[in-house]
Structure formats: structure tokens, C-alpha cells
Length: 158
Image 1 (cartoon, rainbow, N blue to C red):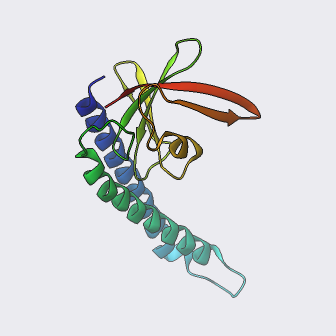
Image 2 (image 1 turned 90 degrees about the vertical axis):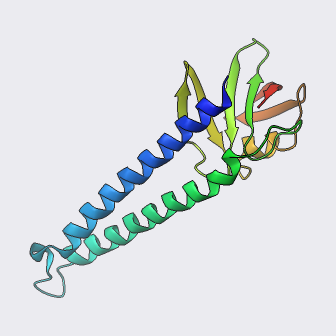
């Protein structure tokens, strides 16, 4: 796995999220300020609801900018023996099935595909991120998902 390619894909995905958020915020703002949404009486709340939506979409844009800002130092982290923010990690289960994760500072749940491998972003605050932090190659982790324990071994840290 080439970490530089993964970082490039993550950058594109974060930028795509930002673009989508900007379009949604602009649409919500246009709706909130449209003359048809001016309240005709005290019970007419369409304009107020549109304003709340616009505010939420604007916050989403800010969150996207913040994520991009937080990722830049992580993208420049050099590989170490222990998993840290900025590490690209490969885990293997008992059946030799591999899963790839990027320990990021934000945007948990974001997934990118690189050369037919899905790489999921996890954060240190997530159960998987907590388990990964400071692990080394050959360390084991156990995650309980839907009441069932899943065991993995760290096989690669980039």
C-alpha cells in the first residue's frame, strides 16, 4: 500500500465533502432569504425553519474546513513503530482477511478506495481508534461489534 496515494485520496474526499457542504449551504441560504419564505403571520414558520437549516449547513461548511485544517499535520507525520495520528494501519483477522485504517484527527467514518482496498478513517475517540493508538506490529486488538468479539492483529504500520 502506498501511503502517499492514500493521503491523496483522503485529500480529494475531504475537498469533495467541503464542496458538497458549500452547495448545500448556498441552497439553504437562498431558500431562507427567498421572498416566498417571508412570514405572512405569526404561525408561518417556513422562513424560520429555512434559516435554521441554513445555519446548520453553514456550520457543516465550517466543520469541513476544520477537518481539512486538522488533517494537514497528520498527512505529514512520518511512520513510527507505534500507531499514532497519521498512521495507515493494516489489520488481519483469524481468516487472514485484511482491513486498512487511517488514524485521523477528524472525519471518522470517511472511507476511500485505493487499488481495490477500502481504507476507513478512524479517530482516537472511536472504539477502534482507542484500540489502535500506540499499538505495534503483531499486537492484537479485540473489538466487540453487535455483541460479538472480533480479533485482529496489527500486520503493517505506514
